[in-house]
Length: 320
Image 1 (tube, rainbow, N blue to C red):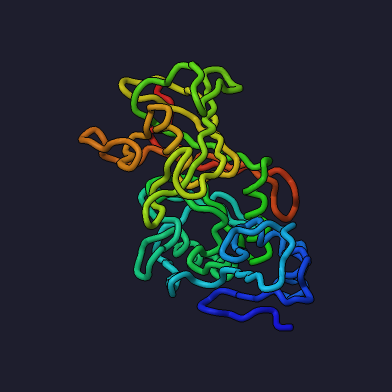
Image 2 (cartoon, rainbow, N blue to C red):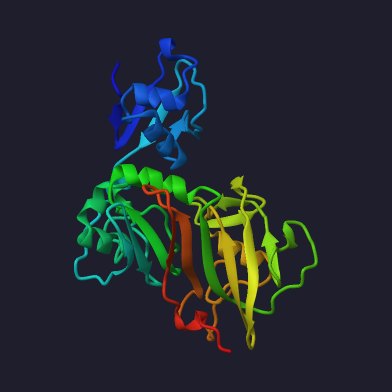
């Protein structure tokens, strides 16, 4: 019984008749795709395993003929080129993890060959072991991503085993991501409406609108619509009222694509500089005013609480 065929950078295996009824995580370990059932579960939590083309859960029981695929390697033949001359601000590092401060206007990792500069390129130049940590080599070990216009904390793993554990930690309720955003308009009232609830803090609201992809490449999201809408929750708190704009804090656990931007636009307060969900005009000269200020999580190896913060850009500092 072979572990699995490798086709175009993806591990692919077909469930045999004698394996019918076996749990997916157990099969991946039995076929030696992963070293253990625990490692298989971390891969499933990372979302890189599919059964018959659909996202799979660790407890899924398989049937004969089911096709299990594991994405591996660099997507679309993209090779991550180290960029030693690119600045990289390291916020935290240990034997397992690296946290960096992503500049605004820089992509997290390349989507196509020749894209650059990217955080991943600078990361693997300084920490070469990160290049082999993530199944998709483009990511340079990054456990999550930020939009190109967003600045702030990005975490990366220094080995494949840690990458799976990091992804798992980032996906739990114990993880909290805190963003700061300057938005257009005044902070809305606490009047309840669909997908909007009063928040747990003074002057706060909670948005619960599900998020689905739209467009051929899924480059934009729709709330409570689109392809495969996923549950999403963002707690938004008023920090400072300004002339024509407002400084807010957005807290979330596992983030969906464009979650903060889309939920703020849903409240009628789009992020300054957001051409996708708001508007860009002559008043916007320095890009998107969205900053991933802090990430709190359980360390994937030590299991101790870890909080990492990134310095604030000028627009995110209180004026009072």
